[in-house]
Length: 326
Ligand SMILES: C[S@@+](CC[C@H](N)C(=O)[O-])C[C@H]1O[C@@H](n2cnc3c(N)ncnc32)[C@H](O)[C@@H]1O
Image (cartoon, rainbow, N blue to C red; front, side):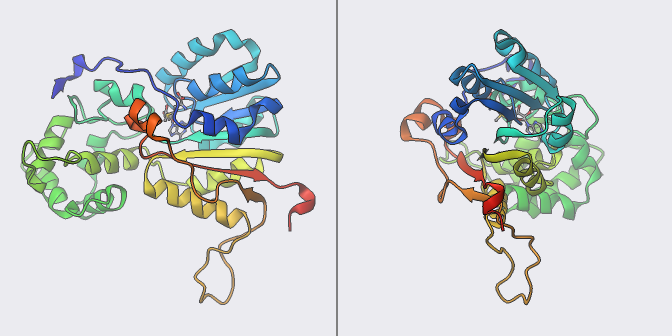
């Protein structure tokens, strides 16, 4: 494990499923595109390069990412604007930018390489650093360590089980709370990684993912409330699209993808209620056409060149014209 000071910036973030994203978003038609997860601006740059008639509003809750993206995209002048904030506030971001609708919306969910490879951000067990994990670094939210200090043993186990799909969640939670009761709360990435290894019985040299991978993923999702209101955000994004406008969502784990899949299905008019329910209560409405019957995934070449793309799934839809809506 490396010390926090060694982490550096690592490899620059490579935009995932870039060609597939452009094929679905159609930036060559021109107009306004909202990149809700600007990151280092890789997707935004490609969108802007496709046509001189294209404008991009980029949103990110990470100020360091915004700073770097602003530098990268400065050459596009007034065709690019950035906003610091949560994409769940997309409606007010558009209003603030003096816009009412968009021709395309992109959400490339999850963490960027900048966040993951900067040791001090505390996202990775590859480094030893304070257990922070906030995408909105240093701002109002609780760090992952503070979350572990506040939640009950049962709540910690539930987070690790639900968001990490970790079968040994109870065992891990018991150890986390055990340390806390001894006055030694988990406060660094190394402490958590070692605790998980002991709880799940990791043997050095064994193949497969690191035993702490699932727990770190779970804690990151909980710290950043990544799944909270994701469905509402998708619905708002679709409402803000012009007819024939496109929404593209890239997700990196099954929980996220499940929400995207079901929300898009519901908004394509398919009832998602229990088939035994006498009345529909899921709010199914025909607003969109789904463009990806099955999610698009990276090619073997992309995974070889960028292993972090391996779990990516892209889903896209087009907003229907008013006349085709029920
Ligand atoms: C996978 S990266 C995006 C990379 C970007 N597409 C690129 O090509 O550089 C995801 C970014 O979304 C941001 N993010 C995640 N959840 C967010 C939210 N709810 N609101 C705003 N930004 C968010 C993260 O801070 C991160 O910078």
